Image (cartoon, rainbow, N blue to C red):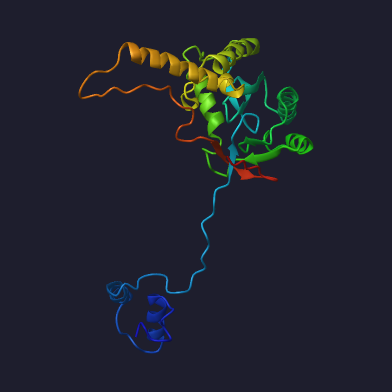
Length: 279
């Protein structure tokens, strides 16, 4: 009966009610489900529309200056509920911080001026990524990027990890041993950030960059530095080779930048013409 032409596309509850209205009771609904389950037919019996899996778009940077990422984080001020706002823009390929500023408040006009100053100093990238904060999606910022011919992208709704490079940079900042719990004033916050970002760009060896500094990768000296590291390691290996039988001699080599991910990818939701670079 369950395979009858009148019932083949109906749920057991529909079949049960139809038969009952016709004066027939063959079994309970649970028994119908048990019979169907025994024959592997407990599933959606109607034809279903199929949709291909959606491909998550990505911004891909193969060199400095192609894709920037920016975000805003709060820094605690001297009093309870008092915060300063740190704006940071970085290059996702080199992780180099191309610009930062600390302000007493967050606003669309400050964000516009922040981006305009960076693009004037470093040139306009081909795309800028951000989350969906009010400043990032504000009309002044949108219009500025349109005027500059810069493609803008935003994190997907309700997705917290679509702006990973900026978030990781903020974590490096706030987990710095010298990072204070609170800043006594706005000038104090700016002084600390000036020291921190100078260290971050020019001294901090970034693991994802093959232990090069962001400035080294950004300005193209990483290849020369890696070659020098290889010379030092080769000389050390020559002086003290590993003679153990269980560990045959192995010439050490310096770490490579992005050995598992040669190109920096950033997932995004495009708002206008997206940019994609292929190696």
